[in-house]
Length: 270
Figure 1 (cartoon, helix red, strand yellow):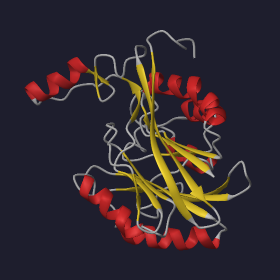
Figure 2 (cartoon, one colour):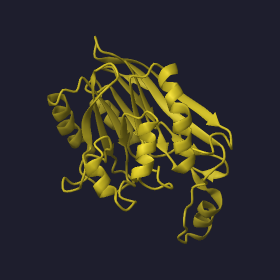
Figure 3 (cartoon, one colour):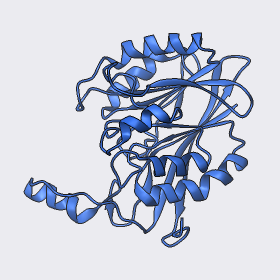
Figure 4 (tube, helix red, strand yellow):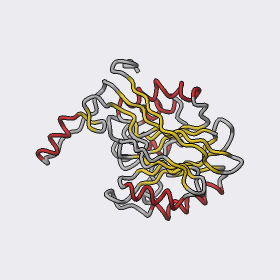
């Protein structure tokens, strides 16, 4: 089966890119299951009901997130009412929502999706390695035939360490968060697809990882707080990873990067 994970969707341009490209890509790439990271989908920070619905209607089977999951008002309620939205599983158990669930794919295979957040250069949460052990056992008990991990983390070493730790136990460990696609896609020993970061789906015209450049430059030059804004239009990039998983062997057998550019103005009515 073929599975896609779409990198961090940033603001309206990112959602526009998903709406414009994902329906076609599901057909062109013969995709059985699609995970979309919605970490920055609502004006660049977090997720709300409307952006979540737009991404799901465009063809996402599951939405993952990360450190900005609590940025928007109403997210707690959304996590409780939208079963296809995940927050990192290693937040304290008192937090609303869930970090791992089993979803049916187009070919009726049950896919487990596990969302984790790193701790290096980020907020100190529960150990993602030990939490992965717990959640993998639970997902298999709930009928998951394979498990896809979205590891939202800053440090390359931590991401690769989790990939090595879970090699042979999950179908894929896909890194998100840095908004820059890496070129280290590989199949780890044991048949686990891996990449350090899938990159960003969002605006690239005069931005710094999706945010308008002047505010970011002012922050670096003055070290004073700035209000970061995501442009509402302009050229956008769609970044994703597609991997193939062999059900008979229980191993990933191919992984590839996928990027598309959307010129400014295309799909602006979305």
